Image (tube, rainbow, N blue to C red):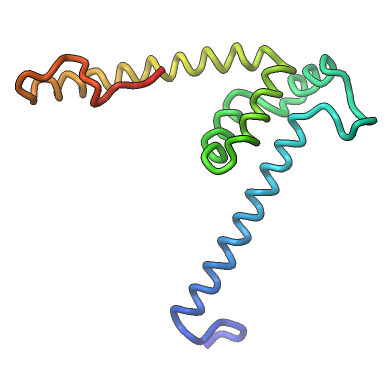
Length: 142
């Protein structure tokens, strides 16, 4: 066996896998903490920058953009909904351009989903006797 490698087969692999999962969770937690901090203009009650300046900084230095906000929602939204909501709301409040762009991107995504689902909805409607066109099986909520 390799020096320092576990010699007890599957349980050794399980220990390594468990340790890797713990490390991955800790890295993920710390990355989210960085984004939470980046989304706020204040360091403490006495150390902060103005809201207007903060909005300018996050735009000029690309601290956030719409793809990054969507990624944060996708990666952390289920397990850390409150933190992600605070990040997104803070970014939108301090830099309204992101909110406008986000709304545009979401509308574009919904349009694409509707186009993709339409043939499927029609196929489902034809495959069922008496099925209503546009049935709820494949609806996309807006």
